Image (cartoon, rainbow, N blue to C red; front, side, top):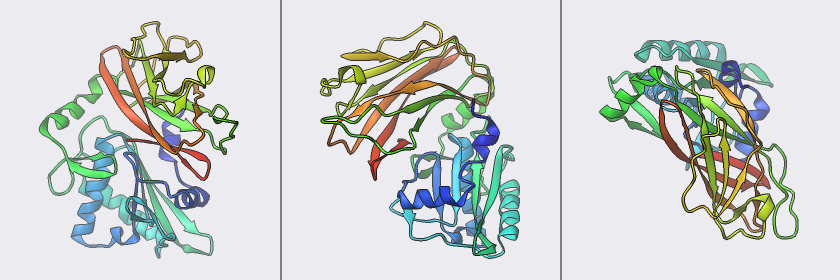
Length: 314
């Protein structure tokens, strides 16, 4: 099980930051980059901080890194080290606590120091999805849509205010941390860990869900049928829904009934698809539902970068 502390302690090592830069990992719903000038001590910049951080809390949570510029939503150039990083960290925490209403409870600011000068550093802010809605310093509510921050509609504000009263589960996919091995026409099976995250304030029961793969991603048992739409399904309580129009299907390992406690992450196993030889990028669709929760659908982009798997929610 992934703890909340682990969620709040992501990207706290310099090598992790460098891997994002070297891999040109794109911004997403749960990852954002800001140059060091985003922390300038002006009213406009401090409003920008309140807008960005509140949008993460109002959406799925995530990480924003101050000290990495972006170009077309990918890391730009080298790390932008900031002076007097201890003071910068304290200032950023104070801005988050004073410029956002209601106060965000579950966030953490980490300073990563320059190994050549420990007075310099960058700042990483990890924010959990909130049970309530948070307002930026301009008295407006914002959310993240992919890598953009946009104003929220009235109904979206109301929906978030009711998060505490129901489960709110979603899927997180964690790819293998190794290079893809290629065979004659397909890759060897790749390991993708499936994690159920309950963002809500209520226990989730009777969890079911599944994935649909594009034609260029195949199930291991039927690697020659890559022109079909394939599916992997999971059912933690024998209440599986059928996906209409699916030609091939593969079940994950038998799962015991799962009760997902509020604000927890639980790994339920792995999916092991194979990629067509010329694969570059594709979209995995998913659906998930639980008792007292509406059907939720979404998409992940699965792409190859330097022969390694990258997955981001779209």
